[in-house]
Length: 201
Image 1 (tube, rainbow, N blue to C red):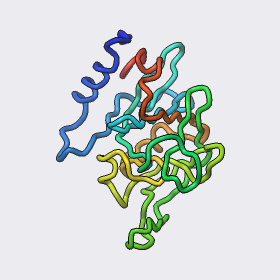
Image 2: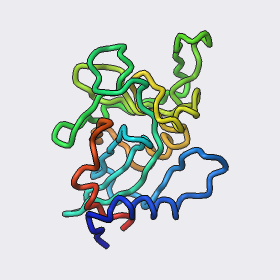
Image 3: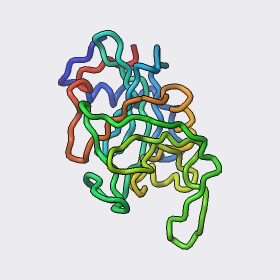
């Protein structure tokens, strides 16, 4: 079933709402449409537009198929990352995507946010390290420390946070070393393939 471009975004939202489980609160929910046929053909698109989300797409022949969507959180400050410590998430585009270079068990990792709590667990179970030219230490990880930041959509120092159960699900079903990752800025609309994507096939 191909989606008519002008209706794609609305249909995506309505289908997702129908398939998501009823939340116990207003926490955004993971939406899984289908497993990947081949995770080597998957890539991720992270949009900083509210609500912040990470979508998983799979290329199948001439089609692009939406496989899953996760609520996410990006850096506190808006805009393209310019220097270390500016609390911004770096951005990339289809022609120059970032890539996952390592998948690391982060369950014992701690971080001091400088807020008086000291060094605390802060990365969830997995850290999907990204190759972000000019910057190091940027990745997609869980949020054991601050689940509320996912609801808000902003709160990290530069990384992309998911709920810990979602980073586990993403790692187990879609991610691998080499996966391409696109991170779109706040003022960027859907990419052309997103409005043409097949959903749930």
